[in-house]
Length: 482
Image 1 (cartoon, one colour):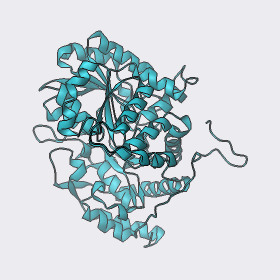
Image 2 (cartoon, helix red, strand yellow):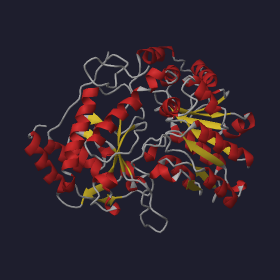
Image 3 (cartoon, helix red, strand yellow):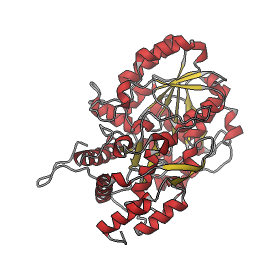
Image 4 (cartoon, rainbow, N blue to C red):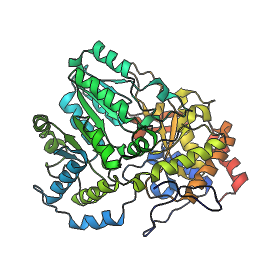
């Protein structure tokens, strides 16, 4: 549906659903929020959900299900082997993607484990437009390397370029020749590049990249976890795509790739995942890893109830009115904050609105984790839980030195069909207040630092008493109970 016009108001993003079930939220007083973030080791992953007002950590597994998805859960076939639920899921995915072979897994990172275990050998180079944390971790775990070849423009914060997730085609071919095709087990293309602001990749760029891969006999893999947002952007931004349906665009993309994997926690609005494999021999070479790591071949570690909900979610992800909701709300949030002068990643992408922490708190050095500090300040100043997407989300170099991230971002995810426009306005208001008091935010340092995926379970502390001083300024503005 096009943007809805108003008679006496500027256009606003409209919720294309009505609310039937609600969950109560709690806004703790600011002093309690300071105490809670300290107890959580200045890591928003460690906060209790009951201590959060607006949970914008992620859209993974927290999107609202539709009435039809919930109803579908009642027909689940819970047989250990041969579940009819699996065959319904396999057939629906074949209908959408045109690939008949499905390996089920409990979520996207499980698929990444299977792919890395099957294909990556020590010193292999996996080429990507941009990495995702778990995808990279699984590749390096087995001794492989990752080469990121997103175009330089993809790492520019402020831009009006429509497809900042595009891979650099000249660098791609040069990298293949340097590494040799035999040392590149696959080229991974990520739809809706997560770590650089949910920025999409064009169909034209995907086709050109997969053509190069075919030229050198290299497998192509699509991470379709954030495909639904990318489909929206291709339809509304890419020349020649406006008249095509979402299903048509999806099939055009799918036809380019040998393997497609996804997290159903994002694509499908439920909790699960899967790997679609075009070649039957390749499929058989991977299937033994599913019972080993996930579960039997007809459930793969998933709840069959979730699988039934996901089947309906796949169909809903092919509806333009459904997939337009996230990008439209994100655009509104980004545009409003940019108008306030807040440094944002532009244009607004998928998944969430992204603050450019390197500009927002430019006084904090990268070794003190500016995005990590900013995400904690955001919780103090509004009970809003976002996610750090910067240096803290990287892993150290082999010599123990920091690997500084290309971008320092704070992601404010907008789970689908969860938040209203008034709640979005609250977030915009609190971010603007925080920006006006940004000089009060200080850095962080590690107390407990896991070797791998440290952003999940690491414990940090503030480098000074800046959280208490920030809270005092907040109380002076809003009162102690806000």
